[in-house]
Image 1 (tube, rainbow, N blue to C red):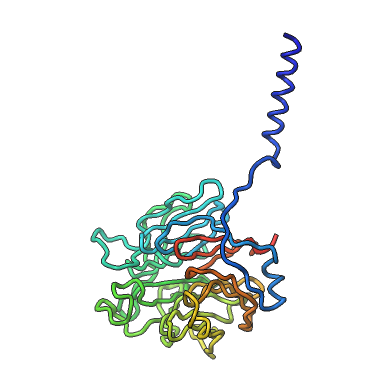
Image 2: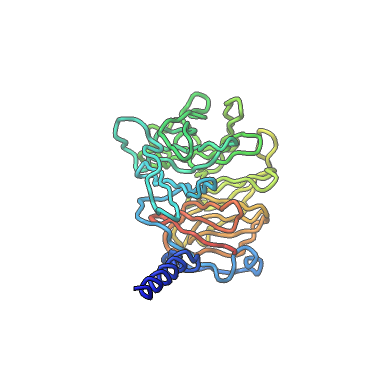
Length: 341
């Protein structure tokens, strides 16, 4: 009896020790896809040679607008046709975060993509949404960990005319909002839509007093938007299949000047799936831009260093705060690439 008791105690301690050993906790293994094309040795300093493209979650109609929330260790992203924002965490996977996200009317939507698109934070850390269905830029008036479909309009008109469907957005350090407005949230998704009120597709700035300024109307399908470090230069993607380009300007007060093509994907668009869409820029000025065939990696001069090659069209991407992880929305998938250890 004494021997059995001692053995039982030893066995119990051994089991507890084993269960509390961090090395015995199994790491979640995700399926992988795609490949990384290296065109310049500089890419090795941005994406390690052993980096993998992981599918962390799937099953969406059209995923968009990824945004990492460091305080809650969660990734937010839009499913635009489903009018829903989802969240993903390592512990629980996919969960509905906010519904409705971009169209709040009680009348059924007749549009293909009524939900939220791009997501960002304002300078107070509140969630700001590009709302297709409501045709506005809006702020969620709720805590990030207690989301509610309560919104304040930040901008919904220019010169008294409604926007078409704000697509992507970024704030500068002064708290001013910059966003793009193509027609993809309208019923016909083009310039012929009878509900389109503006004659152009624009790049806009919203000043802190709410004044809306048209920065550019020359981009036929303005889409992704981002500042280079220092906020002296702004890049905008054009998702027009006839002009699959990224454009860059100097930022001068309430104006954009010296506009030119940063990179043209005309050749790639002939054979690869997708068009210039969302993008992010790291602290070194390297650009991660979704486009034909996947995610392009450019240096700050527009040289293509390499590419994260994907079969399905990629719509947008997000960097973790330490810039070691890239999240990509890729049609029905959401992907994670651990760029560096």
